[in-house]
Length: 181
Image (cartoon, rainbow, N blue to C red; front, side, top):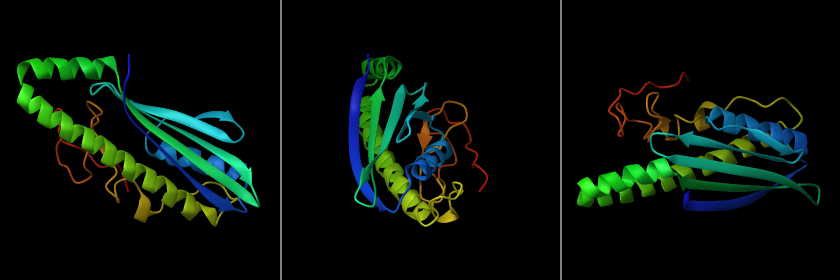
């Protein structure tokens, strides 16, 4: 059973874009942020990221539809809490209700802030990429690389998202290592 935390939708127009170039750029972006990539057709791609210790599952779906002399790109991003995450929350609530309520509220806000930052990064990347439609996908420029803009830093041990400037994982206490720039 999944508990739906939130869903966000957004869309942007890209003039003169080719769908295969757009989908290649979309796949490059999501792979670089540790999401799976599943092509669901020539103009659609989706995927997920799962943090098993937290029971957090984040999914995205991107579709490019022809419009005028370009493509309208639509993004759907969602976060769900799985049974594992719900069990951890219930056990924590029984043991430390006031702390769990406070931590749960903070965690939800962090998940939503992380999602908003990731969505902004996605559009920044596609805008950056727009000048090179037709070329191979380019690596993320340093200005919008995940660590540069505060995208969550995932713990290598438990998979928990942490602030980009964190030295230790907020979930398990493991020292965090930065991906190479």
